[in-house]
Length: 363
Picture 1 (cartoon, helix red, strand yellow):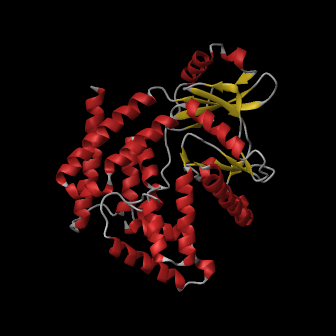
Picture 2: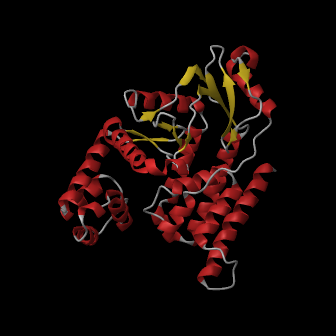
């Protein structure tokens, strides 16, 4: 019964949104809410899987207009914490000991809760302050059920609108499913944290908290507590240029040296420590770039800097950004237009990220 109830709720919400969009297109009376603002509200009402879907779509700027991307990037998990007794039960089950034997102190009430987990403060026997992250009960079953329902919905959409196939919707759902299954397995997150600790071990600008004494399972992870303030706190306005420079350098290091990058760098996952370092949080979602992709990305950047449309086209195709057949001559004309636009700008106004987005949308 739960599956059918969930199926009905999701279909009513999504098809209701499609119908509302049609009314907007036909200029018929509708509530005065811009479509880019309404979509995130619909996704939030549907819960974890769809919030993560929206957050994932916000990374595919080649598919969506900028106003949709901006609204989807603001999606946050608004979820009530679950019962403290369930957290305690899961911690004891995961580590095979009573909470009192594991920690000198453990706060039963969580200080933060999201759609995937909630977090408790605790203290180790040696006095170290730590945070204990406990997975929300039933989250795996809910994700699998929602992904299955989402596939049913997409099949019906493609039956009505076959042209939507060019957006490769099932690839997006596959990506969502892979990322969510990694994010809800804290063994993956512990491994990711260890990777990033190696990457930034000698950094004076970036800090990655450590997993405590290998205390992690699929359901629970214990990590060092890092005290700081969100990077978007107004108190850091004067430090903005320095913090931005640190983040850019950190991502260049991740992309081109380490080949692994933090996949969810929103302000809630970036804290500034009292000593000025940026602390990265939440390593449930990371990305990888193999050596070939890194070399192709460098080639794309060099071709753009050299304003060479043919080289830029070859580098773009080597990155595998386009599936299926293409009109090479038409794509080259589009690239030449992008290059000409930047040729008219002073160098300080060049943006590789913006250029990459424009080129991606040509495909």
